[in-house]
Length: 209
Image 1 (tube, one colour):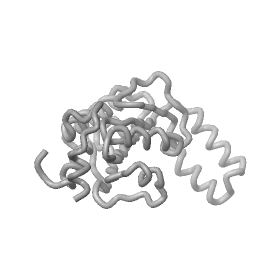
Image 2 (cartoon, rainbow, N blue to C red):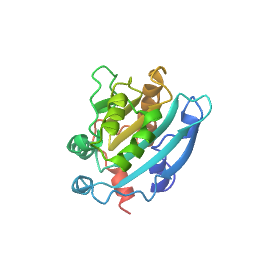
Image 3 (cartoon, rainbow, N blue to C red):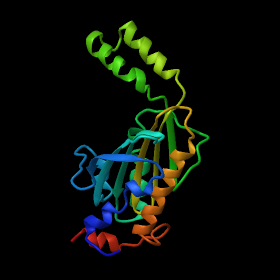
Image 4 (spheres, one colour):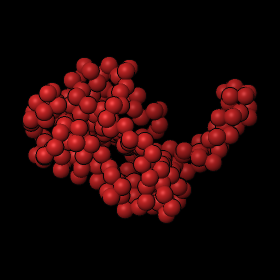
């Protein structure tokens, strides 16, 4: 692929044109994003990490979307990092056993986001504490809601992915979540053709310059 290593890395992320519904990019941290406490990233030879944040536009089934990438020298390093950090990156959410898997070593987690009650819970927790009955009651109400948020953690070639989608409603067709995940895989395959399943290193040379 032509262009600088920054262009190559940026091409791994979803763009507005990749989505069949309106989304607004409100946080572009593809370049310059860092996680100082991520020791595993350094231990596995991480080359680059970045993130984008999206808000759903009018008519979009998504309330918000987070798109994160970690680039490694090869598929083996990406997989080792992915598996070592699963527990932290799933944010304590329950695994969804029925969701279709995608990419390599995929795990999918789903949970009720509690969008309507989340702000109220934060106010009560701050004013009264986490253990107060009002805070606990709101937390229980959120937990009883249907799942409307999803975390996908998987690899593709030398890239580890975290993709978080929060739907407008739990009644929204969940195929939209899967469609965006499939597009992520396509983007990575386009940036690193033939990378899946082999230890290609041309991008490691590029990013080490």
